[in-house]
Image (cartoon, rainbow over all chains, first blue to last red; front, top):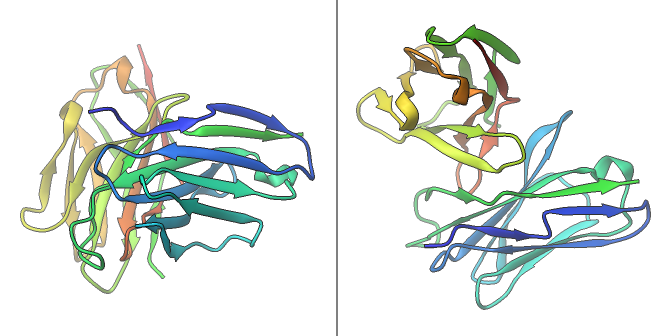
Length: 117
Length: 112
């Protein structure tokens, strides 16, 4: 089975621009979560999508948004980029048997490294 | 809110020596605990997890961890490390729902 794929792997943008990152989950996985990894703040949860609905959201400003499509693929968007948005953005997918059920193991993709100049 | 503290930001050890990476968590309820490894320019790979049952958990690549509820710890150990174990290691807790809270990471460096 193919793993979680993220595109692009590397991205360079300038301040004020917007960016869209893509994540394709493992086949059959319906939950997709996004994390931001920076040297200063470490790994932080951004949001989680299940069946095209955002179920959980971390403590990030509204410039960070996401969506999920009917095939479970997910995108996250960051508008009005700031220097501090430079980070590795990781996507993770999991199979959910029951909405609201116990935690299911998350499988991580390789990440998209975003550099904001 | 649940939190995770990794007590060492860097751990240097010699090859074939034992290693312990320390992790403490804060929680007043049952927890699911995890250790992940991240190699350079890669995502996170699950090493092992504690969901319930035996407090000694065995994972991949010869790693194991012990869940200690009274000390709220989940330390990772390996009896003999190899150069290939050089990586960053993250301890994480599931605070509910489908998300993880991570520690700041421990960079393990293996010296020949």
